[in-house]
Length: 409
Image 1 (cartoon, rainbow, N blue to C red):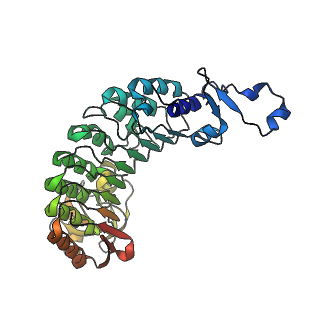
Image 2: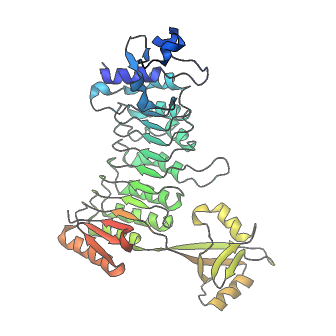
Image 3: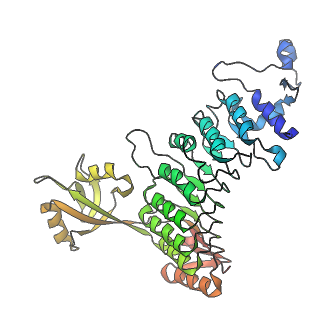
C-alpha cells in the first residue's frame, strides 16, 4: 500500500489542469465571493479519495502556477509506484507535462522493459524536460531498447540523464550509446545530453569498449560518471582510446572504483594530461579545384564556402576542422613549403592537423587499486608533464582550473 507521503504527492499532481482542456481543479474557494478570495485563507484542493492538498503542497511542483518539477524519488518500498502505478500516473499526466523541466523517478520500483517503456512514452510528452533521473530502477540489459531510447533520441531539451544502479550491464549500454553517438542531423538534431551518470551498472571492459566508441563521436557530452563498475585495466584503456577521438569535448570524467590498477589508470591519465588534439582527414578533390582551406602559414583562418573541407565537416562532424587548427602534415610531408605544394597539386590529400588547448578539466581516478607505489608513479607523471601543486589527494594544474583526484586505494 502506498505511503501517505506518496499518496499526497500524487494528489497534488492530480490538481494541475490539463493543458489540452484548460480545466481548473475544484477548490473550496470556488464558491466564495471575490472578497473572500482576497483573504489570506488557504485554498485546498480535493481528490476523490479526500486527501487534502494545500497551496504549500504545490510549491515544489510549480513555477508561476505551471507544472515544472516532479520528484517521486522513493526511499522505502511503500514509496514505490511500480510499473503499474507509474503507467497510471503517466496516463494522468499525459496532457500536463509540456512545460515540465525536472523529473525525478529515482527508486520508484520500475522494472525491466515494461517499466522503462512507460517512461519513454511520458518522455515524448515532455518537450521542455531538461533533467531526468531514473536511478535505482532495475532496467536490466534490455530495459532501454525500444520506446525509452526512441524517446531519448527525440528529447531536444534534455541536458542531464541520471541512470545510477539500473542493472544495465554491458549489453544494456548498446541502445543508449547508439543514440548518444549519432552525428547525422539530416532528420533531427543530435541528442544534447551534457551530463550522464552510469555508475553502479555492472559494466565491464566490454561495456567500456562500447562507451569509448560513443565518446569518440559524441558532440555534446561534457560530464560522464562511470564510477563503481568493473572496467579493470582493459576497460580503462578502452575509455582512453575513446578520449583520443573525443578531442577534449568531455570536460569531466569520474572513473573511480573500477579496479583499473596502475596501467588502466595511467592510460586515462595520459589522455587527461594531453592539451592538444590531433585530427587526421582525407580530402579527395576534382582536378582544377581548390583544397578548401583559408590559411595563414599553416594555420586555418577560414574555410571556403561549400569547398572540400566544408563538405568533409558536414559528413564528419566529430572530425570537423575549425578555425585555429594547424596543419602539421600533408601526404607525409612536414615542411611548410612541401605541404603547400601538396595542397596545391595533390588530388588525394591525407592531412594531419593539431588543435591546441583542448583538454578535460576534472578527472577522478580514486579507489582503483593503485597501491602506494602506483599512486606515487602517477603523481610523478603529473609533476613531470604538467607542473602543478598537490592538496591532499588532489593534483591541481593550471592554477587550479584542472584537477585530478587519485589515491593509493
